Length: 324
Image (tube, rainbow, N blue to C red; front, side, top):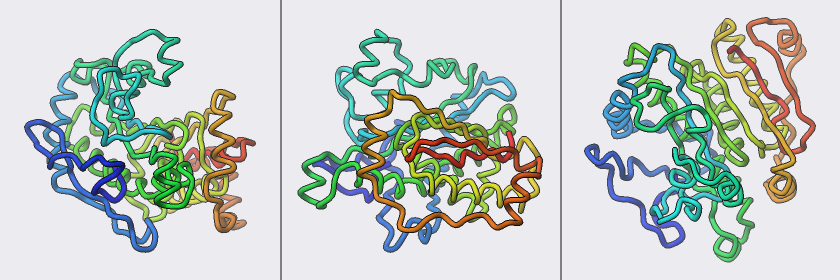
């Protein structure tokens, strides 16, 4: 997903989507005039048709309840970039981290090129025997000098803004995926798990927040949300947490419905933590506090689950469990 479409860093948009080839541009998501939340959810007949063609063959051998995971990259990736000879040198997340290769562990650690799917238990070309994994790549590496010269802002600040803009197309992609899965008996009831890293957490947290704000049905299909080295402000996470709990209460969700969020932090991400705390745009106002009534329900309602917390300044302290 590339915000705004058109030409970025001298790279043209890909060719129009080809159903037979299974690749190409599906739609362009223009910059909203005011805010992401005021833009309507984007639905694309091409996206629906593409997933309807691509997904069923990928899960032909899936067992009932086989896991479904959507992967979201973090900072410093360009999904519009062409593939290169070595995945260690790729800027495209689909080649660099969304692969099934098993290379030298120390070399992959040095290049940050470890393949996620295989380490999560998914296998290539097994037709869904181990489940379905769907990568969502978004543009998060605008470049230091081009951003500074052309936009007058730091590259991390620009990427943080792109995470916000990309959250709405991410919701649209999840919604389309959920509708396709609903038509496949073996996995129609399987929750959609989400795994993200670093700045990808800002995209995912805001997507969850907007799904809850508009009470979109797809939110009820989300299962575990695994955040690795989250890079989002506590206030945004708390806002999302409140919206998730309110939605669970409004819909009368029982345990087993809606997202359960895990935030995993380590010293490995300390450099990006420092960058996030000092370079990302500060929230303009503190997140609204929950009302006394909602706070009481949060403590007592079993269907709303539990709350976890973190002391990191830029990590999602309002980890919400609204079910599973």
